[in-house]
Length: 92
Image (tube, rainbow, N blue to C red; front, side):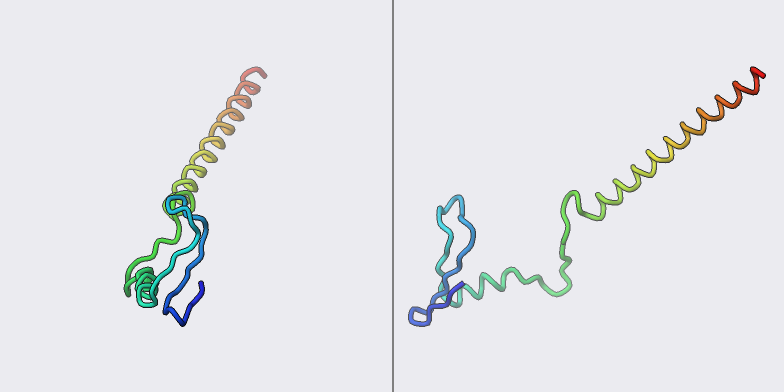
């Protein structure tokens, strides 16, 4: 970002914009401030900081499903162990 005092403009540089085919934008000073202030949330407005895979809801669902998988696999292991021990008792 560069301020040009003679022309009262701000030159903002960013990554190459695919549609505009350039990596800069020239703003009059007041327009630059308006564009900048538009990104500040209102007081009390909730901020979403995580989307998709990293959101709390997704992490909670993954955690619950992993618990179910662990519990079901432990139950299957115990059932197998019990059936094997019952067979050895019955055969003896």
